[in-house]
Structures are given as C-alpha cells and as structure tokens.
Amino acid sequence: MSGAPQLKSATVAVRGTTGSAPPAVLPVSSQDLEGPLDEYRTYAAGQLATLAAQVDSLRFALTTGDTGAARAAWTDAQLTWERVGAAYGSFGGLAKAIDGLPDGLPGGTADPAFTGLRRLEHGLWHGETPAALMPVADRLAQDLATLRGQLRSVTTDLSELPKRAHEILEDALRDKLTGQSDQGAGTGYRETLADAGATRVVLDELAPLLTARRPQLVGTAKAQLTALEQAVAATTSSPETAPLAQRQRVDAAIGEVLETLSVVPDLLEIREG
View (spheres, rainbow, N blue to C red):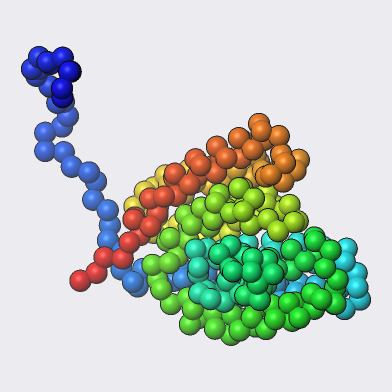
C-alpha cells in the first residue's frame, strides 16, 4: 500500500490437533421431519380454532357497537395469531390477508388490500366506527376459515419448520420491537412474549433431532427464552415508549437467543440422495 511502512516478515505458529476436523453432523432426511411437522399442524389447528372463536367475539362486539370489548377481543385474537407461529410469509397469501401490514401498498392504511387483524387494529385505535369495521371482520373470518381448511396443503414444505425456530423471533425483532407492526394498540411487547411461546413449541417439536446433533442447544435456547420473557415482563410500556434501559434489556435478550437459534436451519437441513 502506498505510504504504508514496510513490514518485516514473520513466522506464524499454528497450534492445534494435527488432522483434527469439525465434528460431523448427522444427516437429516425428509422422514425425520415428518413427525415434527405433523405435531406442528396439530398445534396450529388448535390455535386457529381458538382464534376463530376470538374473531367471532370481536365481530359480536362490533355488532353491539362496543369498541372497548372489540379492542379486548382484538388483543386476544392477535396474541393467538402470534402463538400460531406464522413467520416470513408462511401460509402464503392467507397470512398476509389475516395479518398483513400496509407497508408498500399504494393507499397505505386506506388501501383495500390492507385487511385482517392489523386493519382492524388501525380502525379500532383511530376512531373508525364499529359499523365501518364489520366488513373487515367478516372478511377476516372468511380468510381464517379458508386457512383452517387448507392448513395441511399450505404446510407441506418440511424445510420450513427448522427455519421457523429462528424466524418467529426474527419477525418479532424486526416488526414488533421496532414498532413497525404497531397500528395503534401498543402491544408489541405482549406480541413478542407470544412469539417466544410459539418458539418454545417449535423447539419442543424439533428437540429430539436437535439434541442428537447439538446436545446443549435446546437447553441453552430455552434458558435464553426465559431471560427474554423476564425482560419483556419487566417492561412498563410499548416498545416505542418504554424507558431506554428496558428496551435495551429486551433487545439484548432477543439478540442472544436469535444467535443461538440461527444454527437450527443448517443443523436440520434435509440432505438426501
């Protein structure tokens, strides 16, 4: 490099075990993941049934004009949706219809393509009348019924479950903890707590496969999830308004567990043939 002092040559000593190599990772077959995926489908079906009942409660509150009850029902429904564990476009277009954000839509929050739970949140916390929100709630009920009927057909990709172990909380970090998904309710921390619960479920479903490959991983991740849950439980506000120290503790905790979980997709990558 021009202007840099000339460096003297040096001898570098490399110490280690001669011939040592990274430990081999047991291969994963499609058959290995079929059982965990079936467990997830059963779990998700139960959560979606709960969600359908909560959406019915929300619709009833709207028909009676009770905005307070509608807000409470919306919160219950949103937290249940988080517990389903949808992340990064899982469930395809149905997930966007049920819980999509207005980002990128030409009309923003007024765009007809903005539907579902987030559209209801925006209306309930921005002064829209219950009558005006009824068509949105009816459409949500229809989209949810479609997803329940198609759950098996939209969860056929065996590689998705290992990704979800990491992506659920990655979604929380990107959307909930930045306030990007907040349409007025200020429930980002409560949603993150529900996301942590969904991550625990996925870890339990994958635990036998993970323990055979990284014996300490599941235990470490669960301890870190506990630390995240404790940090979230100690908050006193939304991610947008909480004191800096509280936000920092939550951000540090979620970063730690995400680092641990980041290896899961590679560990459980299907290798056949």
